[in-house]
Amino acid sequence: MKKGVILVLFAMLLLAGCGTTQHKGQSGDESRKGTGEETLVKEGTFVGLADQHTVAVNIDGKETTFQVPPDKRDRYKGIKDGTKVEVEYTKAEDGTLQLEDMKKKE
Image 1: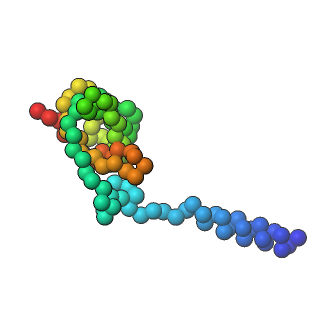
Image 2: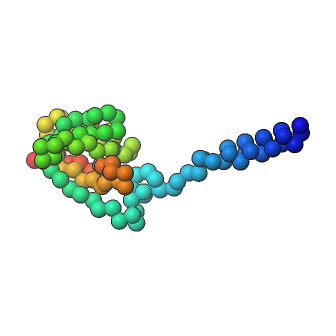
Image 3: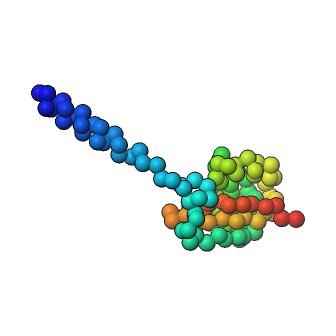
């Protein structure tokens, strides 16, 4: 009985460590250093904020969504729908488009 309890506690401790590893450099620009991801720049029309972390831009007649890093989210709230913009972005391995910068075009 005692050995069974010890075995269960040991197994719980062993499994408790699984999934707690933090991946350094997974946020912001640090995740792209040295990965060789190409930064793309395109012009389009700002469609709007899809949610807190996603902006939509019409590029070449197609609505395209970009994930916005937490440190840049407040930066794009004042842009009005229909504004001409230039977006700078990278494409993650999973196909998600990560917004690096967005500027209003004059």
